Length: 342
Image (cartoon, rainbow, N blue to C red; front, side):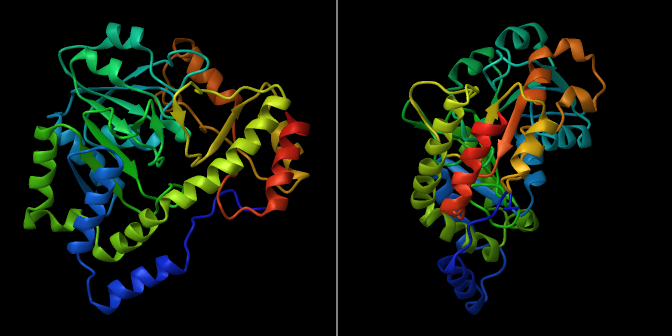
């Protein structure tokens, strides 16, 4: 079996980390600030900070939107479980909505309009699976939009980079992301006031324990410097898979004109039951996963009938491996699996 995911760590990455160690630059300092600045530029933000824990990044954004225990956070049920865990940990109330449609990863605007209230503090919207969307219309609700970049830095919608559509942008930097520092997260702000608050936090010596070390940031800088090559390699593989998916008469969810995908992960929608997908792909040595193991309403034991589109997406969305380290044989075997299994 090939690996489902493999962080792209090369010689230049090792040299960057080694040079940082030789200079004894381990605590948050110049590397951390440079890495944050570079990520801010990539996401079209006025200021950015990088944290040693992704949890701290989310905790900070909830603080910035002035969310207090009992306040409401709106998000799609088809969202990452870490978002739910973080807000519950802080005593916040999740307000779930269904998806916009059966071919969308975005939350339903109609349901947001019905459920938004005086205690609603923000809307979390994920740019899932590297499939970017313009989120401008969600800002019409009058509360901050937290754009979870979902590890797909470099993607664009209508020429605008992912991370530039929300009031705040947040991104995980784990081993499944386009850029990995081993762990950690980024928080960025597009507007001047948001950027000012993030800069003030980052530059306060009292907050040093929350911020990413120079050791980890040096790896992130090296990864950012080769981001263009990584995206180019992923796009070639992704477009090859796209052809196979269309030949198998399956659906590519969330695709629209004006998108520049980065393919941090690869998903497709199929009527073939997941267990059958696993069995067929295994014959080609290919591991597959569900697009999302369980929707958030499943964790909260909410009524399944209230979220039919999120439920359908969880049942029909499949992820297959995609990363630059795949060999030509691996890529061809995955494409064969798509044509045969789906």
